[in-house]
Image (cartoon, rainbow, N blue to C red):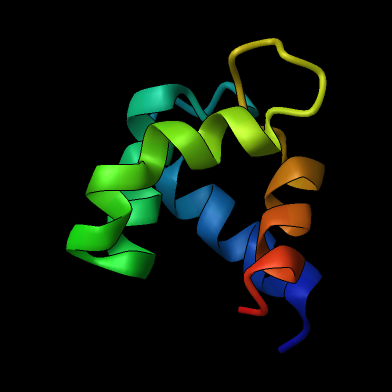
Length: 72
């Protein structure tokens, strides 16, 4: 599975309301799943870093960038 496929699966799993973006709350759940307690403490920082267009949401493309940055 490549990063794009992984991002799509993660995105679909954590986009609870199916609006096509991850809210801060949805993103926090995803980061905690990936990084455990460390993720809980830094999810806000990670969100801000990868919300490239500053719309307060994470798109699939932004999630792919995150997976590449953290080498997941």
